Image 1 (spheres, one colour):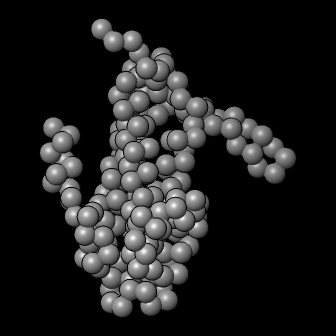
Image 2 (image 1 turned 60 degrees about the horizontal axis):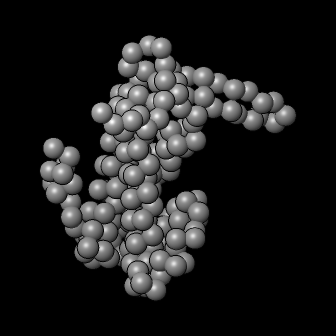
Length: 173
């Protein structure tokens, strides 16, 4: 039998890992879309985009979408919509990634501790988190990745992203 990897229950750990992996994929697709819209090859451009913060990537893509880099208005609107949902997803991602996780005495739950600073006040919050909550976030991020990838492929920016849902889902079985 293998040794435990964490004090966090394995199912929660797996879901937390999925959030991390799916988020990293979203950020990479964002970088590739930026490069595609600027007509810069990844081998030349990733050195630049990899050092951009998430808010900077988001801002650049919003500007490109709203300022004519995407000729078709419906595609531009779709990118803006996806970016809004990615921005909302970043808040969920941050809760998961920056929480201090531990086991819970209650079956099916894990505990997430967070330290919050508001002005001069510091508070520590402990929440009991069901596995389903983390799984919903992970699936949402995965769907956002697919949507952004599909748009990039449709725009002709990143044909290499056309791996699609079917091939990714078949690996999960």
